[in-house]
Image 1: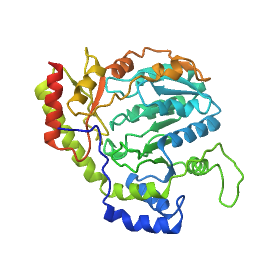
Image 2 (image 1 turned 120 degrees about the vertical axis):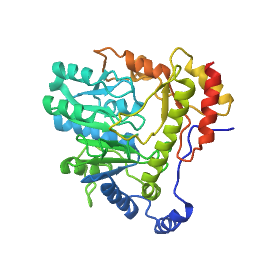
Image 3 (image 1 turned 180 degrees about the vertical axis):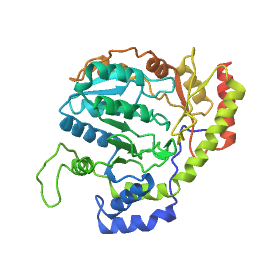
Length: 376
């Protein structure tokens, strides 16, 4: 059996064909009415005041980091050590220094370590960036408490979080802003694309201009730090039709995750540790990731590949072990004032198994049985 790591769930060709033909014939590739339609739809879905489209999540994070640097007049950021490189690159591209903190055992930012840093350096921190990992919401209320207490903005790398619930409330309304991804491996896949959400009108206005070279309508003058980050019409069409059945997808993904959990608990409870959301939250299960200690994960991945099973090491290496940082190829400063052992352990021992909305229970069973053979 061949079980790929991921298959995108795309809307039907019949649904998108009329819009694609109209868009193509009009010559309006970006920005345009289909992007506006999608952004309005996301306001409704997330119940948020402002939505800003970007060509990808990374561009949105970079623009947001630059804005936070300007409005706070501070140059240090706090991010978790276990995350995708773009979480760090957002600050690095704005010449901001990074303070790395550890995570809890599920890969979510460590609240005790964040608070310890804020006690010492709170007046220097432009923002704390938390990450909703694998679809599991970060500890939002604890972060909100710290942000208020130490007067430090909280922003979210929500690349994995579209549709997840924190205590029955959709992500998208937390902190100063959140940035989502519609990249190829996301449940809502548009090939590429990003969405910034906020309830702050000044931030929203700045981000709308930041995504389009800093221009206001009718002028080429540049008023904010900016980039060419416009969301394309093609991606907007895919994303719009994708969100129409996103809730149905999320229900299916949670059913498939429970099938994985049941089989792994039954067959590999001593060998595999599951990364599961808090019972008060709902994950979209962007990935199904497990921790396997005392084994060569790279060798295991190759063995599963020989059985036709795709895997991915999210996230290896950890941020502090990225080549560009270890070899000092960046001009920005990296601080590691606290113990990072949990993030190192996760980076070394995590493996993401095949997971996609159209996956079958037979495919899940095959993955678990082959994993069991490899671990015996």
